[in-house]
Length: 189
Figure 1 (spheres, rainbow, N blue to C red):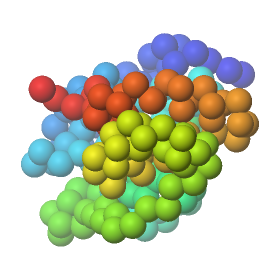
Figure 2 (spheres, rainbow, N blue to C red):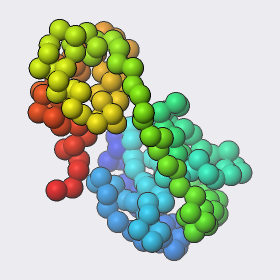
Figure 3 (spheres, one colour):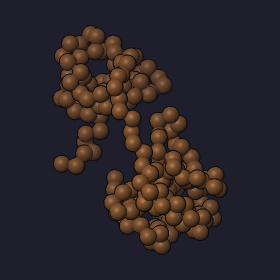
């Protein structure tokens, strides 16, 4: 059975009630329910097309004794771990609270994923071709930080079809020329 994200309201409300017993503080970030401990993100809740999920922002450090975690994007997602539910019957309050207790303990112990520093980046594919043929584009791209360059490289090259890669490149080219990062629109001003 497929549901639209908004059709998960009952499950999301139930998960939020469980979180009220967790000792975490509620906030809304990125338009979803996020629960924090002393200002650090611990758990988020969101409905998707085929499931409702909770994720643990530093789930990589958790023991996952019941084998519930999924790494949604292997080789890309480093710390985040999802726990998916297809229906209300799959939501086990006591097990969720046990996982949250471990996540809070990890926060108290200072276990946090530290992103790796980028020191070198090999530009390839359509992005490299565009850099070679357009000096203005090349100059603008090289002025970006390595992390922003990496975001663009992964965004363009991450598409499986060349037609999609080309469409992505055309969409991001004006941002690069303006010296903006791919995700700058989400930054707080």
